[in-house]
Structure formats: structure tokens, C-alpha cells
Amino acid sequence: MLATSRLLLTLTLTTAIAQAQVMVSDFLFSVSQPERTISGSGGTVLQSLNPNEIVGMHSSPCPSQAEKWLPRSCFQTMAGDEDGDNNYYEPSIMGSIDAMISVQAAGTSFSNQRTIWYSPSVALGTTVSGALGLRPGDIGRIARAPAGDGRIEYFIRREMINTALGLPIGTAIDVDAAAFGNNYGLFLSLDTDIVVNLCGGPVLLRDGDVFVIAPMFYIMTTSQTIGGVAPNSAVVVHTEAQMDLMVANANVSNRFGVCIVNAVDTESLEIDWSATAAAFAVPTCTGVAIFVPNFLFTTETMTGGAILSTQAGGMIATTGCGLLGTPCGFGPTFGNQIGLLPPTAGFGIASYVNALAVQRIFDFEAETVVPVIPVGATAQIDFHSPGPLTWVFLTFAPGGVGAVPVSSPFPWSILGFPDMYAPLNYMGLIGTAGGFGSYVTPPIPFPCDLIFSGIAFTSSGGLEISTPTMVEVF
Image 1 (cartoon, rainbow, N blue to C red):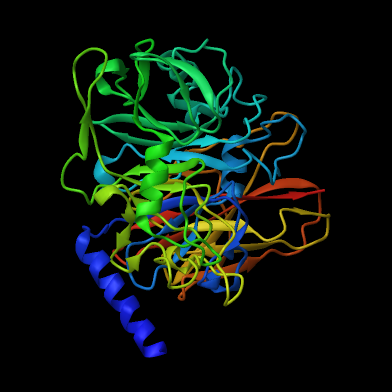
Image 2: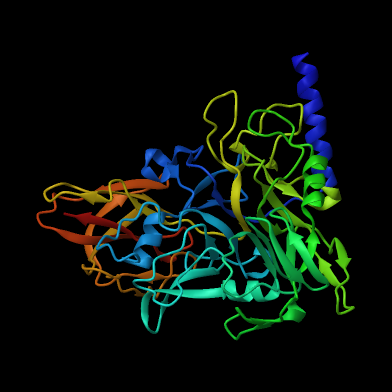
């Protein structure tokens, strides 16, 4: 019986892989619940993943390996004291990453932690950024602008999405999923049902629906962001009922091994670049058709971290390492298919994938084990490094209400985090031959705010700097 089951599973996987093009790029994603990497991340703090962090999964080697790519400590350093409480450390900053997009072409060029766009579930404070900040409903990023660090750049503002939906511009909405393609437009799904006035008239927009703001209805700026949209121009391309049907057709199990039959709420979207052509065309109220690509997508019901594709009317997505979910009848979807550690041998991770982007990525991350320590204590900084040796540097950060560290370009950065926090004070050299390593400071004798970074040579001879991380000493 066991041999027969294994044979059936092998045949099922082989057939499914043969039916679809294989996705060969890397993934960025966020989780809906705290999780852990299956690799253990060298025993470092980097193995612990939170919903307000971005995780990276490389297309190879196999089996799939996921590692923290944008730690919340990096968000905190870039944002500064955004809520004006005289503390940098904000473990719940932005709540969770609800949506993510990359404007890089078909996931073929690298993104870094300054170039990816995201939407939070909780608004970022405005003490540093001023104006509107980064809110649910916006898609933006924390940036260094002429006015200083901790500012917000927007790919699209909430007001523009409201305009496209025919809503009052002040309406509070929450973007739950997003995908973008230059030739296709911006595809979105919202967190709650709402009555809108679209291209074609009023409709109840469900939280499982996917709608598009097509290129003919928006203006792109020279910075490749959306600068304006036509009113009442959004068009629904997939209804919640259609998303339900594609989930059912995919024949995928949840974390308990139960076959998933509906979507409930669309949680993430990305264009499925492995598909060779648009899936179909949708007519609009202007008489001009909109071409709709195939998507990778996840839903609220997909605990275990499965990822589906709209190809063939709904199927489990595939990478070079195999299916991104377990077919019904063959046990739970565990999470190991996206590089996450199942809690037990009997069932999978509690998370669904909350945001998704297909993008080439480079890993060089730092995170403090204990971000807030008393005077006289030591601090441990853990690194995920691309080189066998990592040079550790320290910078003193400004203090006070609304303080924000000042960054500047790291002149040698090509693939990784593009900025440094100067002046860089050399602290020591650590071994990171296995990809991970830790640096422990001497006892810190006075209250201060510190930024730590690592610098390493890559295997190709490049020089890169890690994401920054902070220690507050009180």
C-alpha cells in the first residue's frame, strides 16, 4: 500500500510538472504568522520570521531554502523614530506586509531592500516622514529623499486607487494583494467587501475579487511610478467566485491535509511569468479590451504556504524544486516547499503566503539578537553573509524624539543593500564560511543608539554591505 501511494504521488507530481512551465526565478514573500526557516539559518536569530518582514527563496539549489531578506530591524533603521516615542525599536512596525510588487522586468534583474514596493496592514508613523506616511491602501517604500531619510516614496497612493474605484478619495481601504506588469497594468485585491463604481457601473467588490487599473487609465512618471489615474476606470478581471473555482480546480491540501475548496480572501498576487502568453482579454466600458496575464496567487484558506497558478483554470504552481503545495489525498502542505519549517511531522505551517513577488535576490542580512539592552551588557549581531569572512562596523545613531539615522550610498554595492550609515567604525572580523556568523560586542559602557553593518567580498569579487540593524542601550 505504501509503495502504491508513493507511485501515485510520483505520477501525480510528474504529470502536474509536465502540464506547466517551471518558474525559475527567485521569490520574495511574507508570512501571515510567525514562522521559522527550515535551514535553521545557522542557529542565528535570522531563522525567526515575522509577518512584518520579507523572506527570500532562491530558485536553486533544491530542496527549497528560504531566508530572511528584509528584517524588521532594517525597516526600523530606515524609518527612524517614526512614531515619535523616542525609541527606534518597534517590533510591530507596519503590522504585516500585505502586498508587494517589483517593477523589474519579469523578475530577471535584482531587487534590493530599497527598491521593492510594499503595502502595510498598519500605517507607518509620520513623525519622521511627515505628510500622509505609508498607510494600508498605499503601495510605497521607505526611502532617502532630498528632504532626508525616513521619507516615503509611493508607487501608487490610496487616493489614486479610490479614484479608479469611483470612491471618495478619503475612503480608508486596505490593499491585500498586488501585481504589476508594464504591459498589463496594476492588479489589486482589497481586504474587505466594498461598493464601488467601476468602469461599467456600480458593483459590490468582494475581498476575493481581482481588479486592474490598466495602462490606458494611468500616467507613469519618469520615476516609473503611477502619477495619476482616470476616475471610475478599474475593471474586475477575476471575481471571488472565479478565484474559488481556481482554488478548487488546483486540488491542493491545507496544513492539515484537507482539500481546499474556496479562496475566501485573495491574499497575494504576482504575474506568472512562466506562462508564455496572456490568459484572456476582458472588454471595458471604453470598448478597448484589456489583456489579462496568468497569475501566481495565494488565499486566506491556503495554510501550509501553498502557491497556486491560474494556468489551466487553477493548478499548483511549480518551481525547479517541485510543486508549491501538496495535491489532495497525499497529506498536508507542510511549508517546506517554500523553505519553512513545519511545526510537527503531522501538519504544516500555520501561515498562508501574505504577499508575493517574483524577483532575483541577493542575500546579506544582519539582525540583533536582543535589540534593547542595559548599560554594561554585550550585544550579539547575527549575519547571513555571501562571503567566508565578514568585517563588522558600528555607527552611532542620533537620539531624541523623531530621530532618524542618516544614510548615504555605499559606492561598491551592486546586488545588495545600497546604503551605508557613516562613519563606519571597524569593530572586528568574523568567520561566515557557512553563510552565517555572529559578532559579540564588548560591554557597552553608556546609553546610546548603535547601528551595525557587515561588509564582505562575494564569490565574484564584489564588495557588498549588509542590511543595517540597531541596538538601543539604556
